[in-house]
Length: 392
Image (cartoon, one colour):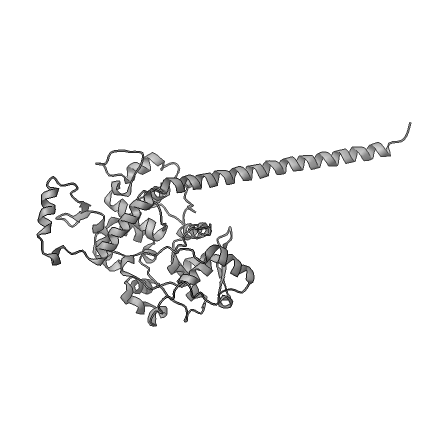
């Protein structure tokens, strides 16, 4: 997979990188032309579930690192990812099949042992953790992280020290930490986490406790079972209205199990998916004389004069590249999405709390039911003894 990742790290011009991209992609048809039902599903139940829960489900667009650029640059976050065994995964780019991604998730079940079972176009797919790691090349040793601190980290990590670890020293300590207040390398790693490793569509601009824990763990060389974590994220995506992550991984799975896809519309790789120099620059970072990325000058005192001078600059020199535009759009989306963090976090906490209370209630109810059953048996036993007692 090493050669494959190098081939797939390029944008749309790299469609020759693997067997699947040797042919020209078929343009995606409009949503009004769905795939014939009998081709996608083998049962009516699958079809009905798809129509109710997955037919219009959004898919999270995958981003990837430009390995060629980051290999030649001195980025600490990239070296950390390589040391953690994540280079292949974060540099992987691939086209995907929108409708087949939805079908994959529609039929997907993940057991408590991590075995994925699903079916696409009549082809049954079973992916054990071992096969999952073989396909994705993700590290499988380490803590089974699921968004909460694991026991082996409790002596070294807490919420306060975690925030201090990622926060810039020149930033005022506030209850709410934003991505812009993070140290340079930590912020870039946060972007990789929220766009590639654990992608989400909301709260990109505000690191969650989970984000901070993962950044802390990576910088401190803690081993994480990334295969387990990504399966956990896939399972969470089965909730109603959740966006479906890792579409490029689904392409790998379809390849592995030889699901026929020759006539399916494909979504190709786009330039805006690539993370490179322009992405780093869009954060407001600049390179110092030593080539290190640092915080750029903010709110210059002569901002108005500079703005006036900019108007006289030649149009060709002041034009913004398409990549810059897309990165600015990403920043706007990040700003808007971050406002939903509190709602999402509270909802998850409420869901977890209610689930725990319901489990406790079921346990208590079961104990009461067992006690009543024992009492009934004892009463029945006493009644039989009374009935069989000799008459005086």
